Length: 70
View (cartoon, rainbow, N blue to C red):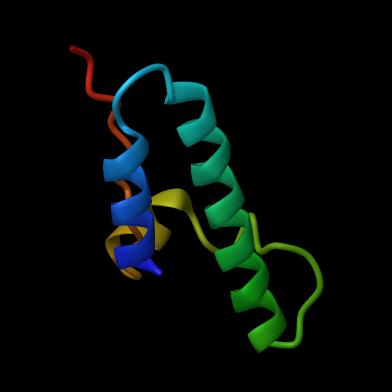
């Protein structure tokens, strides 16, 4: 998943993509949380179980959503 996100962000990073990147980041986090919860046969998204820092530090989820200006 990380290579696809990295390529997508690099392609669309020029311009006014900040709001879109915020939406994508939230959506990816939600999908990963949902997958982890279902893998453990639990309901919900695990908001209390997995912190944002855990997702990005432990799972090494892509987190370089930068907009290039200029």
